[in-house]
Length: 293
Image 1 (cartoon, rainbow, N blue to C red):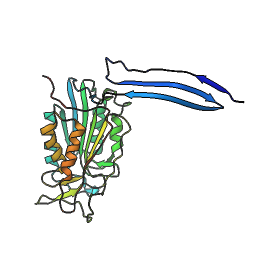
Image 2 (cartoon, helix red, strand yellow; image 1 turned 60 degrees about the vertical axis):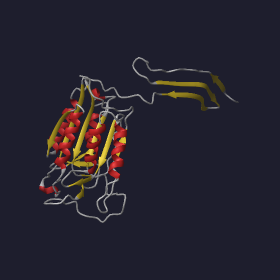
Image 3 (cartoon, helix red, strand yellow; image 1 turned 120 degrees about the horizontal axis):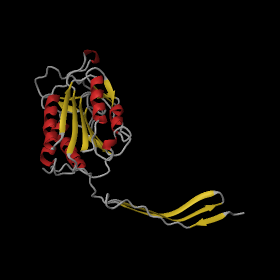
Image 4 (cartoon, helix red, strand yellow; image 1 turned 180 degrees about the vertical axis):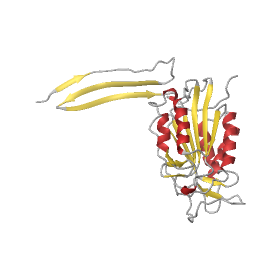
């Protein structure tokens, strides 16, 4: 015998238009239970403002941490990262131009790095627009290196997820990693040691091999690159800083990163050729427009 029960339901869910431009409508028009099987028939409309931006008019732009690893403890058998100080200098200048409070740390041990990261995660960011963290180092297998040992990328990003850092919930969290994300290049290459100590020419090296895993949570964006010139710094940081200098206060951030990808993709040195990548979990458009005085 058929057990047929029919229900009619129409509902609407809408966020307060005073606090958000986003509206979400879900309408369930028919629902029935038929012979022990749950069946749904529904129509839905989902509308969002595609131009919605992150709120970037807080009192402060936010904190930008830069961890610069040029030297490493001898037992790691890793060469110094000549050229990284050029990257550090350029990044400091560009982030200061965008009104960030920049803190730079050179050659810290693992414990000191995690202390600085934890302090940043525990700080009150309620009056800040966003947060930035940059690592200039060697890396491998989901890790980046401090002076004396490696650190899991997820151990760093986990501290900034919503359950750990509530004052950054709904705000952009930008991580830039100048370290290799693997040994894959656009063209076949001959393996070579990434040793660049005692160099007198502007060679191109790779900062070891690493494949990053992404943090689970909205509003993160992860930017990766590996090649580094031993005098001028990395192609990626050079072109990122160039784009930030010219377009940083006017171009949407993921559009800026795409422009940087295009610029870097035109570079090559011998057989070396690689395009940087970014993985975005951002939920709105991100602009660094000038702060009102």
